[in-house]
Structures are given as C-alpha cells and as structure tokens.
Length: 214
Ligand SMILES: N[C@@H](CCC(=O)N[C@@H](CS)C(=O)NCC(=O)O)C(=O)O
Image 1 (cartoon, rainbow, N blue to C red):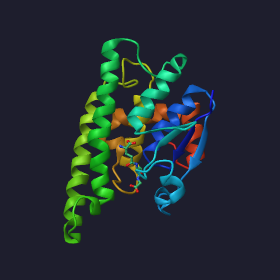
Image 2: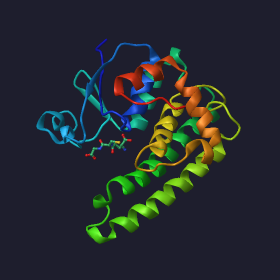
Image 3: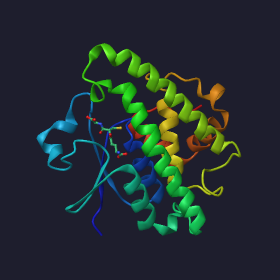
Image 4: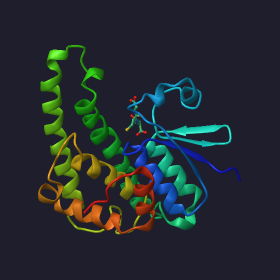
C-alpha cells in the first residue's frame, strides 16, 4: 500500500489530522509548511493543493483535504485503531462534533487572525477581531458544557474527535486568544491534559515544536 504524506504546518489545524495518523500506528510521511513564509502559496504546494491550505493528505496521486474528511478517512482506513465509533448514534455524535468544531470554532478563529479576509476596511479590523474573540469564547463555553461529564468526547471512547478538540484548546491558550483555559474551561482542560499523556500526541507535539497542555 502507498504510504500517505501529510502536508501540515506547526500549530495549524492540520494538527488534528497529524495526531490521528500517528494514533493509527501505520506508516505515513510528513511534509512541513511554513505558513508565515507563504509556503502554502508556492507553486510547488499549489500543485498539491490548489486551495493553498493545510492539511492535505496525499496518497499516490490522490489528494484529500479538509480535516473533517481526513479524520473520518484515517479512522475508517484503520478500523483496528478504534478511532471511529461503531454504534450508529455514537457515529452521529462524532459527526456532530466534527461539524460543530469545523463550522463554528475554525471560522470564528479565522476572523480574529485574518480580519482582512472578512472586511476590506482596515479601520474595522479591531472591532471585528474583538467581536470574533468574544464569539470564540462563547463557542468554547458551549464546547465546555458538552465535555462537562468528563472523559473522551464520544461515548467515553477515544477517537478522532478528541485531537480535533485539542486543536481548538491549543488555539484558545495561544497568543491570539490568550484565554485562561484551566480557569474558564476546566473540563476541556482536563481533556487536553489527558491528551498530553498519549504517546501519539507527545510524538506529534515534539515534531511540530508545540508545548504540551499542562
Ligand atoms: N476547512 C479547512 C481549513 C483549512 C485551513 O484554513 N487551514 C489553514 C491553517 S489552520 C491554512 O492552511 N491557512 C493558510 C492560509 O490561509 O494562507 C480544514 O479544516 O481543513
């Protein structure tokens, strides 16, 4: 079988797919992009993913983008890793989580980081960023509520939703939001700390040069 290659950028949303691949224990390769240097807009990368975004998972001549698709695909390709639930309701809950995070958390965060994508008026940037930061905090509160029973996100079993949750915890902790995650989101922080115990997470954080949740 062809070994897939994950195109990723340190600390970007590709982190979730990166952890999921590592969790399977199967062989894969990585190709690192520096988004600040504009690698995603290079001709070399646009030939891989014409959208100029990470992640992209390349298997032979097949290119798959979008975290939610990659997460589901990786889980289904490696059923023995148990990363996708078997029960239909649990599967629906896993899909619900992936939709919730990708449709709400990700674009809201993008409004804080990349206001120029959402308004042409530079004078509107501070207001837009401030409102998006508030909204991101509100979304985190809603995510916290769903995690308040503790444990992994879906039916108490580890799966691909968990690394995707970790990504947004990391972004909440990071320099763009600077949230006190432990204070504001204790259940989610317990989840992030449990993630930090996993060997696959440690491997990927070391490769990406990220600080583990504490
Ligand atoms: N919906 C996509 C979003 C992909 C995306 O926006 N990736 C960002 C990193 S988090 C990116 O590559 N940004 C580079 C750019 O916008 O120039 C997914 O979840 O995979």
